[in-house]
Length: 175
Image (tube, one colour):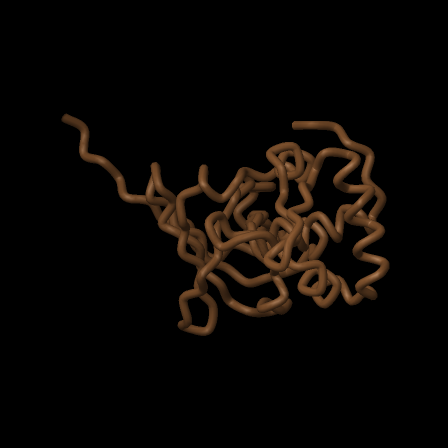
């Protein structure tokens, strides 16, 4: 992972750019970023200049211009570019959401009464709230499905912390 010293505000702004960016859909407008982080357009434009100097975003000029995260920008947040990701379904309230899961990290699988997982998303976690039941999966390789209740939400890193109620993966019969 690239080690770039970002302020909390810069990290929040870069996270907003990465959350809004979709390959092939063009750059993210400064106003969209400003709305996402609840800052003025001028503040975001100044901050984007500094982030461009750090090499974590690129400015695209013109009427359809805006900002695109660089590979270094994804790495600074510990995330993978969307083109390198496989979709993992996340659902809450019986509704499937269009989000991409970066990784699922298990914090305490060895202790069944305190089994926790961190689900890192490539999109904003603003649609979620503490106490909601969610399910994520199946994962691309192991076909793992994780279900539980949201205990905490980290908006800066787009992370849901789950109290796991159920883990399921298909078991292959030995040959």
